[in-house]
Length: 121
View 1 (tube, rainbow, N blue to C red):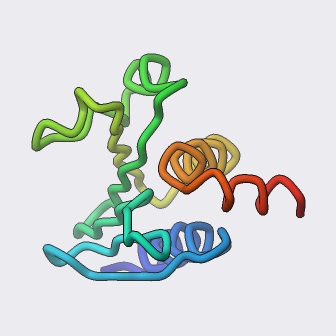
View 2: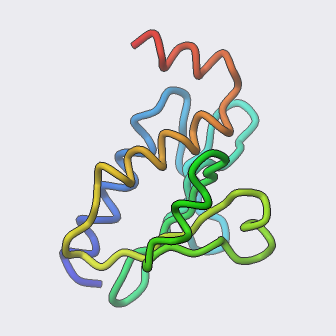
């Protein structure tokens, strides 16, 4: 894995773990960022030789997201439930958009109490 891919994975991981009551798990060889106490996933991160994939739940922006060339509905039937997977190379990564998607996913999955805590920051 290239240094640029490692850096991108670290950015995504750090972003996910910046939300309250989150932790990292590694099911199926991927990184999953989950919310305590239920352990529900709001961000999956997968590494590949030449890109990073990430999956988020986008109840509001899913239709717009899947129109982007590097994004698609998540496989395994998750796409029909609002999950979107992005495939990123290490150059020209739209971090502002990715931050917005991770935020939307956290808010869609997290208990209302945590969302209120996030909004109070």
